[in-house]
Image (tube, rainbow, N blue to C red; front, side, top):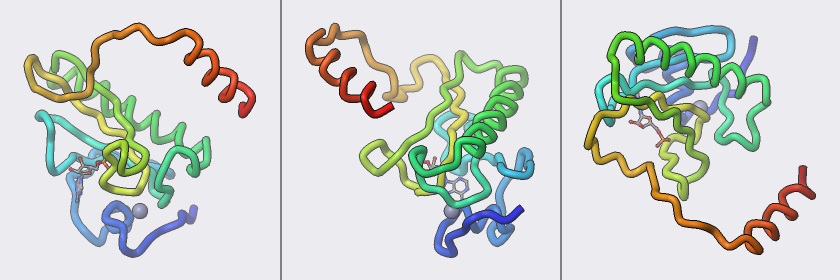
Length: 141
Ligand code: AMP
Ligand code: ZN
């Protein structure tokens, strides 16, 4: 199976075995390896083999494969490392904190008081605003 690739992309280089990684598993469409800047011990990445930057451009079946691989890794993390919890995270665009423009899902174990600023408290929204945006999105689907 051939995948789109980008010669200047760090994850494409990992997929092509041009730079090393701590590879956890690999299948036809995905690869999983340890993150070299772990937020907590066990932080890993499930990565599409092909170079698609974001969720809006990746083929849905590849996104599904990346999610399946993330689930396999998450199960091992939960069983073997017993963290307090695990976040599966996927960023799209610099504004969302994406630093590598090659689609990946973080498998991020969480520890008590780890200071990861991902969770937010509930603040009730404005119903009219929610409805107006809902209508716009619904019409696009
Ligand atoms: P994001 O910021 O969501 O795009 O996540 C990119 C992740 O890739 C970061 O958590 C980095 O630590 C990680 N990363 C970057 N380069 C490498 C590499 N060569 N091997 C493993 N992980 C990497
Ligand atoms: Zn790439």
